[in-house]
Image (tube, rainbow, N blue to C red; front, side, top):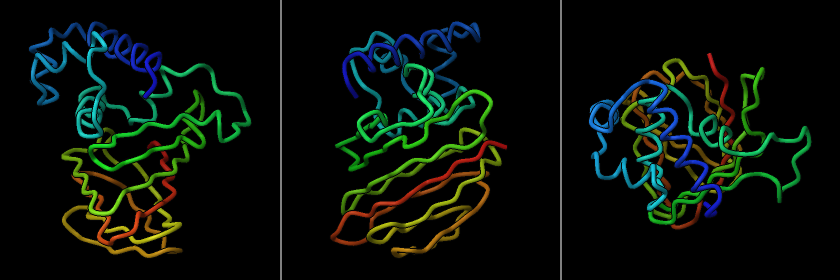
Length: 186
């Protein structure tokens, strides 16, 4: 993330915690993150990883795209590739492009995701129970575990489901996997 986006995200995270009347210790209990990490995030001293962002989103009951859209400027109706927000977690090997970010009054969003070879990302909880998702693999192969059931998707395959619990996204081959993710809020 860029420095300005990091600073806006830090401000938004602090604002969300204050709106709920939570102390850092209370947010730590809700998110499973240490008080120190939360404090550093809110001061923009560190950027959140994919896992940390997922834990915060679960604590606040929103998707990562919703949270990131809240810190972006009002999106225009047509977004050229250079206007689509990109978020990277190089340590996890994950790139996320909000092709069609969330917008007030709309329930769906479109995201392009890329996992590098060997990337393995586990989301312990869903930020919004019952979240509808459609995953269409564009290039490569994706191993996706939902509700304890593993699916291996190849280019052209689409898996659609409602997410109620943990999930795992893994790139099982030596080539990156690129997929489109459609998220529809319940």
